[in-house]
Image (cartoon, rainbow, N blue to C red; front, side, top):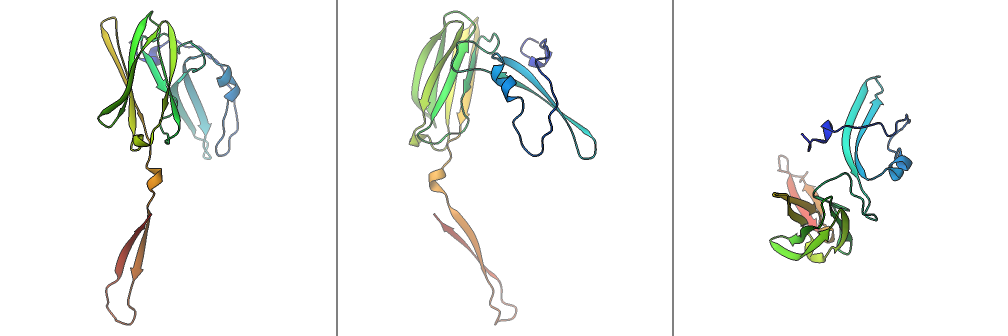
Length: 193
């Protein structure tokens, strides 16, 4: 299956051993120097008991500054962040390995299409800046759509925009009358914000 990245032929790019206590960024220089494409990360760690834990993850490296696509996809898109605040700018990167491909993208807030545009890409990628508005609180979506070689390609990217401007402080208060034996404990929920 050509869409299953686990079946793709691969070669070793780098390997090494590092000692990490807690949290750390490792192999950052090798990742910065890597070409755009799909990579399989394999990490093995020893527990305090001497057991080996193994994790595998396929990642996609790409750059918004160049035209080079990660691999040879007919349709490809990515966003710079899945969480934003009003005033931020989300970067949408769209691309295709096919010639003269028209890609439609739209920004959707609830049921309303806020903006939309056709982009023409030819064997490369383009970048679109999407400003995050105050009205986008509660999440918005960026959708891309194209038809190529009698096949429809649709991708939906959800961007979370939390209600950080409406934080509530919730506290529980309790009262028990110690002068009245057997009295019930009274609970109050105090909400402020």
